[in-house]
Image 1 (cartoon, rainbow, N blue to C red):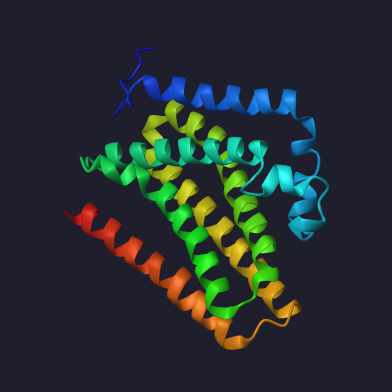
Image 2 (cartoon, helix red, strand yellow):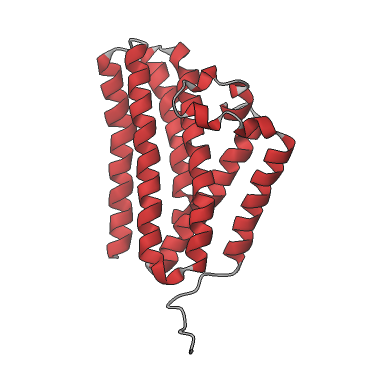
Length: 214
């Protein structure tokens, strides 16, 4: 039986980068096994109630930053693979997922500064980090599978987009109910959602659409 050539190839270094991400997570699991013991509980419980949440989810914990680093790596690789698939040479776009994360951190601090709801900040930061840490973990097997099945690139692009949307929706819904439960004023919620969540996504969509058309 004659083997058919693949329609496209990705650079081999991508596989090594992803293997490096796997080693990063494996090392973290070996050194800090408690990090992953309560991950599933965080999907349904407030992050601040999870044991050792400060170390695993906050901006001051080393384990938290290792998981975030994994997200920065995998999301950049994912964006790069999409750019290659659509034959777009604007490689600076690989930094968009990382930049968007830091924008959302800034947005949270800005919303707290405007509203004065300082006590609510910690819970939202933990929820934000939990979302992106899990997103980075989910991307690893998807990207490796994509590398091994390049003829199904369109399918894997759709899968990654669905994963991003699901995690973003989950975070917004949990954050919304958290705000209601803690009696945050409605106009602060609307200000935050419209100005600091929805508007940037629209700008991001327009930017990506313009690049795809170009």
